[in-house]
Image (cartoon, rainbow, N blue to C red; front, side, top):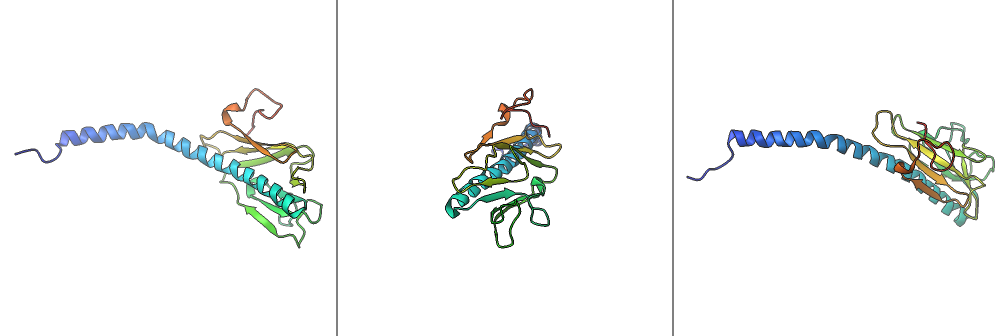
Length: 184
């Protein structure tokens, strides 16, 4: 009579091999998930930049990207989410007649987002010609504490375009330039 199944020894050997493989694969899978979350966050900022630029050109009006506080002024914290709206007031605050065109949600708990630019880091103004208001700078995303993901940088030039710096290109020894270190 031919055998019909596995012996207990074969089954235990198979389970042991699977357990060893899972032990090695699990940390890599967790790091991959953390890296994907970091990429998603910085790409959302890049998408907001492109959306604001296109909106400024199509509406022929300045458009702001900024984190709003409770009084609709651009003084909130970037990690708490940010909004895109037409700048009717010209004062880096949302005019009551200016609807929020797009709202971006808060980052995961513990993550941070900073914008450092020439002139101000509280908002980014896109002009009707598609350029920024002389605000070249960079967004710095820091993953939550304990995450295995690396920081991300989105460099914004005066023409209103964003370029994501790959994490492996960030030089921890540099204190100036687009590839300088991110302090999380």
